[in-house]
Image (cartoon, rainbow, N blue to C red; front, top):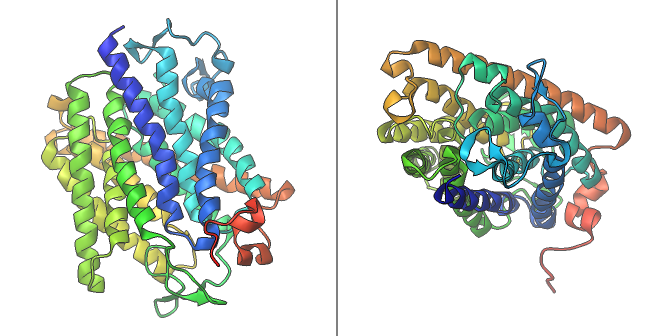
Length: 428
């Protein structure tokens, strides 16, 4: 084992941990004041719950020995045989216990991403049940398929450096299923026939009102803070996925930064053209979309390719968010699908387009290997279909014995009071 590699992956693990509370601030700033605490605490408790789930059985299902090539067995249940002196099968330079800890942070933030789709209306108890089931029956199998050396998508040749497919496609498509099953917020009125949308402003946080409660972000500084901390933590997310303090980690870190910057600029410019003003919220969301898109490609693409990936991500996610708000009846509150789903899909496919062997031994379409793009497409379609159907069925199941939605009266009062008995601000 190498002390330098251990030190870097330890640091990266801590950076990725920061991303889940950062996501809480990012999401909490986008909801209304009466749901600010509930949104923050949902991210915090998901991290706590997933820490236990991943240690007890999740890690074994994702990285244990193969069970018919579909999912891991329970040989590593309760971290049996996983220790500080056990060498990770995915890196001979770090202990397997550190690899577990690093992967835990990915497993924790992924279900937390989904909560943006049903923000302001989910029952806390039902959320916890769903998270445990979803991480077991959706996330763990996908992680096994893509990252386990025996996973069928891995053996197919698909590449996903840091979780574009495992994390973002899975969470984004699951969020779409959740928005459909749970339904829209009370007070959201849509006129999709003529393209108008009352109650939303194009990225899930609109200007309509219901009984005096405006659908506007409660705290834009929180949004900026959350996006900034996500950007910072993402250096561990992508750079740490090299599992070593090496040149690949450097490359992944640099392209991560450039893709985020490019996407923030492209989203800003599109908003400026379409709406006349560059919004702080849009710039923040755009940066996150760039981070999402570069995630699977960060260990495979060049600097110029990363900028192209980011520029496209900001544009297509912006367009899909506005299309969803103006042309559909789906109330994906914080546009998780438009951002994580679309940017994740684009990033996974872009990996098959822009990958270059001089970075990490794999060529994509632009460098003479068209089959890599086809393989990436198969992986995206398989994961998206599995995540959507699995999430849809799990939500229906949970709703049978624990209603997913709070009552209309509880929704009107806000989840902070009705679910937690607390208020964000004690105002006279």
